[in-house]
Amino acid sequence: MGKNYISGCRSGHRLWNCPDQITARICVEYFTIGHPRLIDSDSPTVLALFTGVVATWWVGLPLGLGLAAAARIGRWPKLRARDLLRPAGKLLALMLIVAGIAGSPGVAAANAGLFQLAGPLGCNVPPDKHTAFLADAWAHSGSYLAGIVGGIVLWVNTWRRRLALASEADNSTLPKGKTKMSLALAAIVMAGLPARATDSPPDYRGRQFVGFEALSSFVERKEAGGDKIVFASPVIHADINFNEVVISWNADLHADSHLEVTAQAIYPQGPTKYYNLGVWSKDRDRGPRHSQAGQHDSDGDVSTDTLILG
Image (cartoon, rainbow, N blue to C red; front, side, top):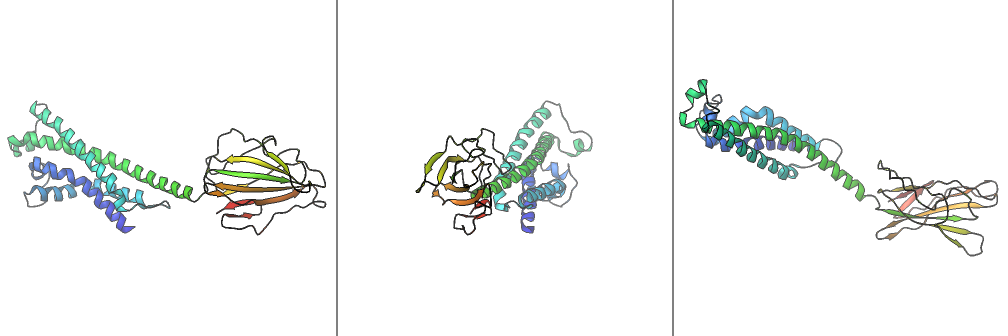
């Protein structure tokens, strides 16, 4: 993490210093006279590097630290320094564009006499450099504003990017889309078994309830021997990604009958087997009432009454 924090801080300073390299070449007096002389050099490159960093570290450093924190802190997928090059480059381009746009009004205002250098600056800056000096001042102000606002936006976008990566990672581990459930009955169930899904919106907190009120849409068939009636539901299309299925019911059974519930998941590559999610009877003394163990395979397993898909 330390390496990425250092990279983030360096990125912040680089973003902040590039406009300095341009404005130092437009009017070097902006650095030698308009700011305290911090280094004995008249080189625009050296002055922009040294003065630009020393004079603005208090802005560039927090922006770099904030970007590194947005990219690394937390349990979500972490971004590396190279993952930030493109968005940081876009911010740099924005700062340069804003600096150029902001400098133009400075030139126009100076030529029109609306703004003039006065006091010590007016005396110390050569007259033929007054317009260029004011252009640098306007360009710097615009660039700093764009850098501060753009840097904060970059923090937010970096954080949102990590959240999106986390969501994609979660979704890639879950079966997509739909399940098919069948209900195997030893006698006709009078109430509480699925038939038609409600139209209520899905619960996006990770759970979705699908309710049924009748058996009219189920496919009914009798199995060999005629003592078992099977009701198979239509395919149920889930509105969320899921990896667990729990089935509950209300049933009014004859005393000598029992209910067996099975379910399967349908993936794009094909369905799983049917998993037994419980056997239930009205009278446990006359009929079975239990869950079924030992159903684990490569697609999933049953924990008591919960189908857990792998």
